[in-house]
Image (cartoon, rainbow, N blue to C red; front, side, top):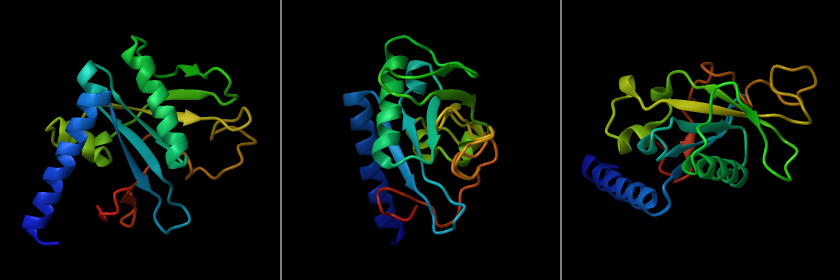
Length: 171
């Protein structure tokens, strides 16, 4: 892709994000896991910072599950419930719990949100990581059935060069 094609594509993506945030209040970016066995997918919001709340990111879930969780959390925030680090909550009918944690260095990952708010990576929008449990165990607990790469501890995630967003652009 040449520079003009890339700029045209970015302009279209910017318009898509802007229209989605205006219409629904929130845009979700899903990044597919790379080819490495230790790679994991993740999904994050764009739009919460505009209503005075950190953006949200979740690791290791399918696109549908991550999107559902983030949309439910967005609705909570939109309705006046500020999520707080250390808070653990669940949703009616769901056995899984979710823990809210500060996500350090969001500028390393939240490209769409920072582009939307015109913020350089070093002055990134803030973010909270949502960590989900499996049968009552969080990643640091005995009995957690997945490796630590599925839900990396906040501040330990490193974007693999072969991870790519769900748009198929290879970014």
